[in-house]
Amino acid sequence: MKAEREHAIGVFDSGIGGLTVVRALMDRLPFENLIYFGDTARVPYGIKSVETIQSFSAQIADYLMARQVKLLVVACNTMAAVASEVIKARVNVPVLDVIDAGARAAVAVSDRHAIGVIGTPTTINSNAYARSIQALRPDVRVYSQACPLFVPLVEEGWLDHEVTRLTAREYMKPVFVENIDTLVLGCTHYPLLKPLLQDVVGSSVRLVDSALTVAEQAAGLLQAMDLANPQRSQPSYRYVVTDIPLRFQALGSRFLGRDMPAVEMARFT
Image (cartoon, rainbow, N blue to C red; front, side):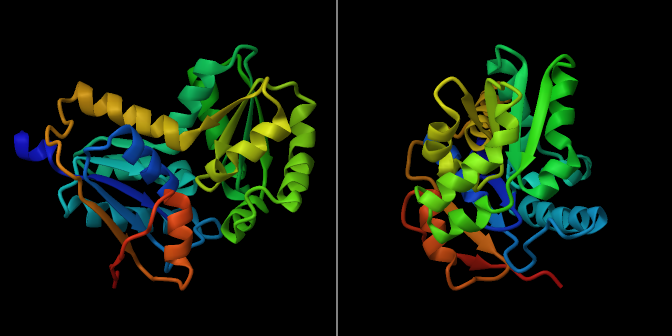
């Protein structure tokens, strides 16, 4: 069991956005070893079929399991929406995902039971957040809004740009009408926009960051299962991708909030 406690947490995403989850895990669990897998060669997943996404997710889960991870975190909302159950059936370690974590946190903090969800068109069209929220509390009203421009704006680094602010105001107009008290950031890119989004929606609306909530879930689960790493030395962080775009390390540093180290390459045949 001691050796198992020292095994890494495996985190995976279709690209780079899941690094916000890695950042949250680093902050909440500073002694845990981490392996991040970003399928940068095959991103975006949102335009692919459910079967293809499930197949890719299974490949990545197998890759991480071969590296003896003790916990899997599905950091991609698209993967979580369509492949979580496939992954859980395939592995023998606990699996957490950002949609379940975000839904639980939103239900816990919403006073008026009126919750907004913003995400990519694929995530919103899957209705996965609404289903998860209403499975936990059927009387909650959920209002979803696709925000397709946020991802390119974040990757451009326009985190507090007037264009981003105006875009956010336009996207939030139909959600404001519903008098929500909680807003779920249903994309791993969106935590970088938190200050701007909080300013746009106002202090009366609580923002739910799925990266933070899944990190909190991971901490609780490791304690409950006696899997927390007892070591207090510098942890090991590994980053594995299927392709290295020219901007990957620069973007990675922005998402991590620290320098992005060298990354490893993995190839699927």
